[in-house]
Length: 201
Ligand SMILES: Nc1ncnc2c1ncn2[C@@H]1O[C@H](COP(=O)(O)OP(=O)(O)OP(=O)(O)O)[C@@H](O)[C@H]1O
Ligand SMILES: O=P(O)(O)OC[C@H]1O[C@H](OP(=O)(O)O)[C@H](O)[C@@H]1O
Image (tube, rainbow, N blue to C red; front, side, top):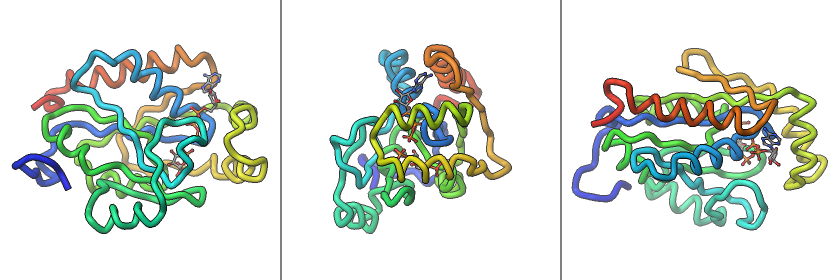
């Protein structure tokens, strides 16, 4: 599950897990990439590559492509901190993130609104970053991106209004405008987390 001699219980993870969620096309991957470039010199802020049962050459997010059978094997062996299904795909956050959380670091990953209760069970310090954009902009961006078929884009737009359950510590970032504006906002949010009293071990 985790590497090294010390395997912390979930309640001993002082680091913050940042789940970036929001409707398809809002710009989660673009904002994560922006913040990753801005924070490349920070050893205490980590950006997760998710494992997804999607073709590695599909475009968009830099993920680790995995076959469905291998995904299930990894899940059974406890290889995921959190995993979920959406859009006919399986998604997983590797259990290795617990090593960095045990050090008090910040972990950033593209999450899922549908799996936030699972995230909260596993990560005692969870921040939800809800990326939003106007509905007409979502449609335009998904069509322009061209990763999915028209039918799949329609299904993604229908899922756009999925609500964030109540009770989560949430920061909302509107990415209807320039990527740099929203990207700087995300960068600031991540850096500020490390100034919080228990942010660093
Ligand atoms: N502020 C922006 N201005 C213009 N285009 C943007 C902006 N943000 C993202 N885009 C573009 O919109 C498209 C969707 O962005 P992105 O893939 O980051 O969204 P996403 O929320 O991760 O979507 P999904 O959940 O479907 O993966 C991409 O082609 C991206 O380049
Ligand atoms: O609608 P919800 O549950 O928030 O998100 C569902 C999934 O869709 C997106 O992934 P991608 O666009 O396939 O990479 C999200 O990152 C998430 O994993």
